[in-house]
Length: 66
Image (cartoon, rainbow, N blue to C red; front, side, top):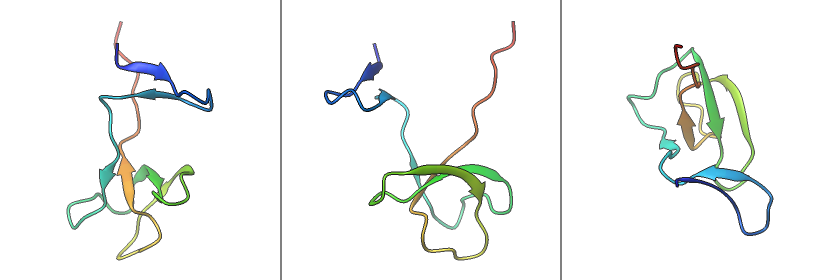
C-alpha cells in the first residue's frame, strides 16, 4: 500500500505521489499546491514569473466521479 503514516506519526504520505520541481513548464497564475523543500510547509497559492521561494509544486486534487 502506498499510503502510510510516517514513523514519527507527524503525517500521512503517499509514497507514489511526489512533488514536482518548479521549472519553465510549471503552470503560472493558477491555483497550485506549493512547497519550499527546506521549510517543509505546503500551501495553496499561485506562482508568478520567476518567484524563487517555492521549490516544488503539485496539482490540486479532484474528486473521483461516482
